[in-house]
Length: 471
Ligand code: NAD
Image 1 (tube, rainbow, N blue to C red):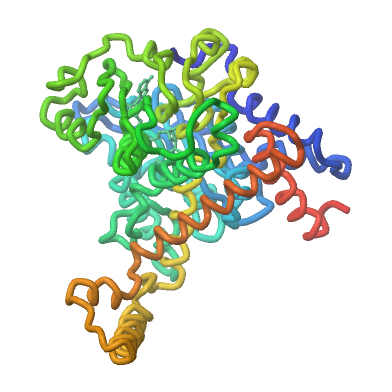
Image 2: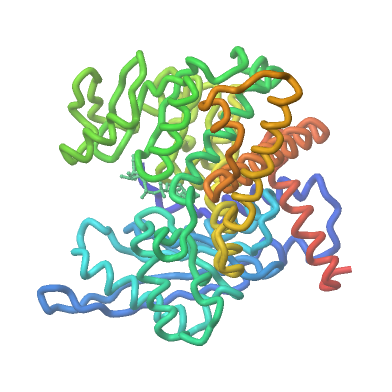
């Protein structure tokens, strides 16, 4: 299912905000200010193809909200990229950042290409030219607007963007913070690549361990043996599946472009990835059933359905057939507004995108902080912590007259490194935000998405009011 002509992502997101606004009393005009996109940059640029011909490419960068700067949001490469989509994704970023207390406004970029149609060199030329266009208009800068990866882009593209920005801004001492999701060797941060999927896992785990919420959908508390279907086996889908599998859940289905894989006993995401790398497709994996029409898999029986590919996947056409008890929105906007109504009527819990996939921007924030401070998390205190822990272990040994084994000692004496601290910050962010939206949904007697939007709306409104822009 691809977005139809009547689907407008920005209008969908704005409708969620309107619903949340019904629970708040905002000064006149403030809701409109929060809702609208502050800057929309739509442009076309030419690139020379490998065969010597020229192609003109359509691209966007939208800054939704300047209530905090810089604005932040990924860059998507897809042939479905359209203005309403980039606007919708940019607005989701504002609400997401506010919800999880990441001090950025929301933005998004899009380039209308199918990456499969271009060689590596062509993709590099497209990325560098796109970045130059952003530089010309001040739409990229560590203090103003900081892109990151999204669908169709990753660390490689972020490295090209950073290099292009620094070429034009060699005297910007914070220049390397102009983009996040960079490779580790280029001032990236440990844990960024897997951050969104790890956050998705934490969010689903928090709900699964919430006995009261699970009772509402007739499930026992806990992740163990929960049956999960994941749509999209890219960065977010793979890492979500991996952590859920490691926590004891059963990944019974994976749906991709070319079809799906199904195994009632559970699939090992690591093995599926290896099979895909070896053969070029997830299909025909030994021990699993291949499903030709993957969109049908969204309608299979399962406990948790994790759409992790793109927007507009669960619509009024298929919502009535969804059998999952929980829909966990790892992708942005996978459930349309009309479909949400049907799912909620069916007593299905939706974990909303603005919460569930916020792990990516959370760790991007840590990367930006690292770039601005020019020091890795843990570098200064790790050895000091180790030494302190060693002293405590020795004191306990002396007082108890008991010696720990070498293995136990190694476990007790460690100091936190960058990966530990990133994971700890991500965990804290996701757990705290879950409690916040869960409590809000109870006090306001509403669903989790509306609760998440209420929390985000109140924070953005407070920011405008505190700046004196609104009374
Ligand atoms: P990706 O390009 O790494 O992976 C997307 C995967 O979905 C690909 O494997 C693609 O083949 C598959 N796919 C595309 N259309 C499909 C369809 N119709 N049916 C089945 N599979 C399909 O992208 P990603 O970074 O994993 O992003 C996925 C979603 O998560 C997007 O909505 C994105 O906005 C959102 N998201 C990503 C991040 C991040 O850090 N990458 C952060 C927050 C949200």
